[in-house]
Every structure is written in structure tokens, then in C-alpha cells.
Image 1 (cartoon, one colour):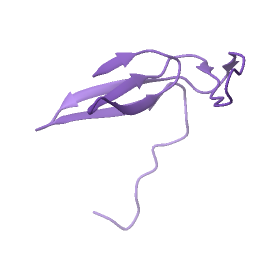
Image 2 (image 1 turned 180 degrees about the vertical axis):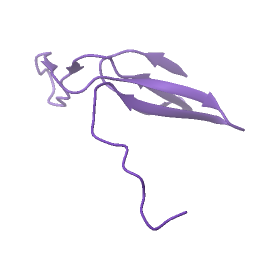
Image 3 (image 1 turned 120 degrees about the vertical axis):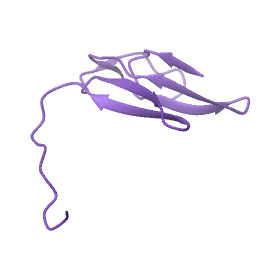
Image 4 (image 1 turned 135 degrees about the vertical axis):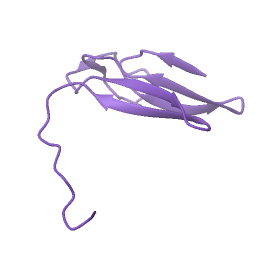
Length: 77
């Protein structure tokens, strides 16, 4: 099962089915596991999911933004 977005990337098993929630492309819902905690937002990097079929289902979480790199691996062909 795949759904999105919830402004936080979450993966869990639910009733024996792997479930995955995509992050939002902007801010995130603050991860606060204290019972009855107030809802809030955190300015974490946004992201999105890229799903593909390669003899099975593969998902990639891709952050949104500009980051240094790519840096080639050295000493390997």
C-alpha cells in the first residue's frame, strides 16, 4: 500500500501489508512521540518518492533541494 503525502516519510507493516507514506516537498510534521503532544511543523528538507518496478517493487526517497556532489568514487572502476 502506498499513500502520500503526510509531510513525513513513514514505513510500517499494517495487517501484514507493507505501507509507505511519502514525505511532503516542503516542511515536515514534527516527529513527537509524546502522547497528546501538540501538532507542529519543522523546517526539515522536503522530499518525494520515486517508485519503480525491477522484478519487484523498489522505492527511493529523494530529498528536495540543492546539495553538494555528486562525488565520484575513487580507486574503483
